[in-house]
Amino acid sequence: MRPQRLQHPSPGGSLAWLLLLLVLPGAAQGSFEVSVSPEAAMVEHGGSVWINCSTTCRDPGAKGGLETSLTKTDRKTGPGWAAFLLTSITEWASTPQCQFTWDGNTRVAFANISTYRAPERVVLEPLPELELGRAYNLTCRGLNVAPVTHLTVPLRRGGRTLHTETFQSRTGTGPDNITSPTAKIIAISAIATVPAMLLGILAWGLARRGRTRREARPEPGEAMPSRTDFEMAQASAEDAPEEGGSLNSADDASP
Image 1 (cartoon, rainbow, N blue to C red):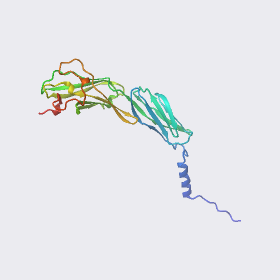
Image 2: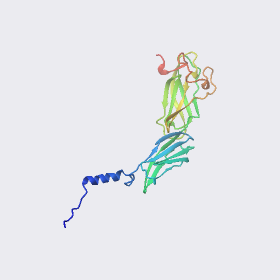
Image 3: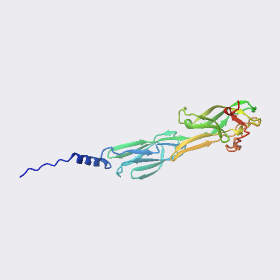
Image 4: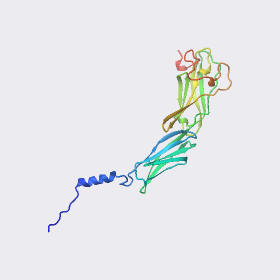
């Protein structure tokens, strides 16, 4: 009787089996990932947003959830994903945590949610009766706006932007009052009036489908001398005069 020769698997065959095991769903511990969408969202104060948690694990036994202090009012699920509706969001900054657990292993992903609020009021400080050829400083104040770090204050005449101010160096996520540094303007017409200068405050947000922007126009100012009243309610950026206008920036003035 001849002794039988033992068959040893070839190195190539062992490698093939190893690769096959690795590509099978859940074949190795911790071989799944978790993601969240959107990763960052900016929502209007008191608004709502859907947060979608997804995993690469397709095992129906994988359990998903969302840990957050925000209010969850709806939930939708499917193979490898779970979506949660967060409503009445009033926290200025929050970090919901998506998580999936399978075979004793848990993976997490975080979303960053910020809320914004347009300014309650925008005020241009009063100016005296304007004199032809004289320079004046124009100052703007925005009240109770958040977050200030994402705020842009443009000073416009018609469709032309004369001055823009940002506040990226400011810190904090809650509401605050802002004062835009003065912008120098020069009266170029004897009938100069302030309504030709419009100021808008843009509060932008990163929504689920992209960026959104809000503009709050100034309210009528307090009583001031005639010909310099802030008749913001009667003016619009499109209707302000382009030629023969009442004001100009210092940069536009002729030497």
